Length: 405
Ligand code: ADP
Ligand code: MG
Image (cartoon, rainbow, N blue to C red; front, side, top):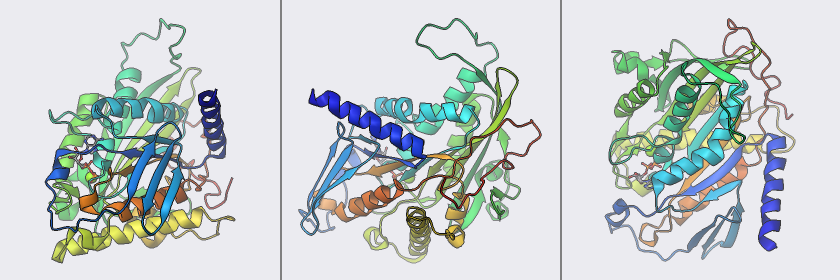
């Protein structure tokens, strides 16, 4: 049948992308939320087009009076869900859990959320629900890694025919949490441990093939509740500001890293890094009527995101240029391995439903264009060899990071 052919095509498409090691790009459109209706009405009312998602074909259709109808295809597309928390679970199962298997095999993984302010990036990564629980991909991943694999009392058997054989045990897991604000990196966990904000600035150390943070606070997390407490308390320190666009808009890029040591059966030890990136909003400055300090923040956000765009552009050019401009911003420096480097990367592109009174189509369009371009970025993935427990986490890093595979 047609549906079967379609499914086959999608499966083939997926396995081809897997083999190529490209950044995997998916799209999530959030539902209309109560806050949408209360947006200020002085933003011009424009019937500026149409926007549709087609989950079956993994496509997004956008039409504007100036561009006509455009079709964007992605690895997966998720439309507005009636039950958002349930969709958080679906996203985890379909997109993140398979990547966590790679993490357990010693591969670095990065999960990034990109999109304009209010499109659901923070919801996707962290996902605070009304009851204060965290339902996002990060807490779900931590739960999977720690409670499933670390608990010493968890029986290793029995295994039903369709459950996975548990071959690995997470031996240790540590977490760092930083934000990039005004092109400075701030150690959030350091501040939770009493450091003043002014003392919490950390330097990025860029090696020839690695990047690390000088003296960043790294806390061991062995229980899910501990990790979630750090996340919740850390989030409170994050620099947010009320703009007209969104009640709580993040003014910084948040980067949470989990460093894992995994013991496989047979005695091999793997080290890997799982990084979650919640980017600041990609909308243009004038839209949120920013002024003064807010304008400066917005300019920094725009500058770092356009540096990100430049890196993605350079990496998606064939042949790949020898020079990739990672050093143009702290953000791109920090994403050195996540984008084009030694990691499997999932880019979640968040978009808003079509809200004519907010004239958000040009933002949606530029977001989808960025996402389309990112599909062409091929990471220089190095399958991690067995390493001894004393090997530094970054030492078996990128090889030939600027080269296509
Ligand atoms: P961003 O981080 O992109 O600025 P947020 O994640 O803060 O956006 O989302 C903006 C608002 O929309 C929040 O109130 C959030 O709870 C809500 N929201 C975002 N995504 C969803 C979703 N998938 N389902 C339900 N509500 C959502
Ligand atoms: Mg946010």
